[in-house]
Every structure is written in structure tokens, then in C-alpha cells.
Image 1 (cartoon, rainbow, N blue to C red):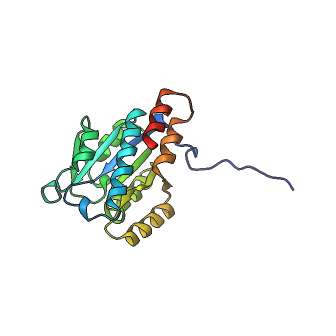
Image 2: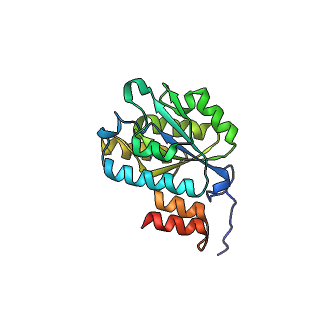
Image 3: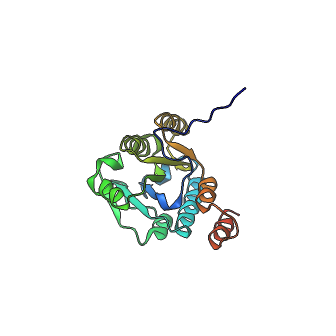
Length: 193
């Protein structure tokens, strides 16, 4: 039996590389966060992800959905994002706001690593739009949540069917690090312990 390998047509290479990646933190806000399912685990994993992306020097974008009503970015998260300007939005999809899409375009990084809330509203709509715009949407499943776990489950299923890459925090950090033995690898290893 002959095996024929076909190159992946129409999609970027399967590996997610740090030089091609940016992070997007969607609406992790003080009045919304307390209502999320598994909020302690969500905060722990999201903090780990952001610390790891910092170690790897991956640029981050941060959004807030209607901060007047939902509050600002949660304090433990905002402390990790001191250098980033927060982009306010009223559109559920981050791509519905010109400031966000303009910033993404200026970064010129085709892979967008996504964390945030709520999975079935702002995260889902952003992912669908990013894929439509030609980005590789990389959803970090243990760094997103909804109030209802079933809403998150259905949203992840939809994102996958729309072409998003679904991963977990530790996996994406080691994929971006690529090799053992570097200072970055050691820093990430300490974070995940």
C-alpha cells in the first residue's frame, strides 16, 4: 500500500510559532468575572498563560466590553498587562472595533492566541471573525469560560468547526518555547509546576 502525503492546502503550517503570534485578552472584567464557571481555575490558568507569553515576548492586546457597565480588567490580570493599552469596545466581536482590527493589522502576526470571557459571546464571535479575516485563531480552552459550562462546551465545538485551533495553556506555552534548555523554557517550566 502506497502512502501519499498531501501538503496542507489553504492553511498555514500546523505549528504555532512565537514570531508569528500575538495574544488577545478578551473582556476579563471585574463585574463579569465573578459570574464565570470555574473562576479560580480560569484565573490561575489565564495568569499562567499571560506570564508565559510575557516570558516569550509575545505582544498582547487587551479588550474591555463596555467598561462603564462591566468594570475594568480584573486586577490580577491587569497587573500582568501594565504595558498594554486597553482597547474599549461595544461590539461583541473584537473585530467589530476598528481600534482592535487596526492594532492586529499593525502587529502583522497571523496567529492570535485567545483567552477571555464569555466563551459563547465575545470570544466566539471574535474567533469566527478572525478566521474569516484570515487569521489563525488559537483558543486556549482552559483560559476561556462562560457562566454556564454547557454554553462554553457548545461555543468550543462551534469554534472548532469554524476552523479555530483549540489548545490548552501548558501545551501552547511549550509549543511556543519549541526547545528545552533555554532560559525561556526554564522560566515556563517553573510557571507550570
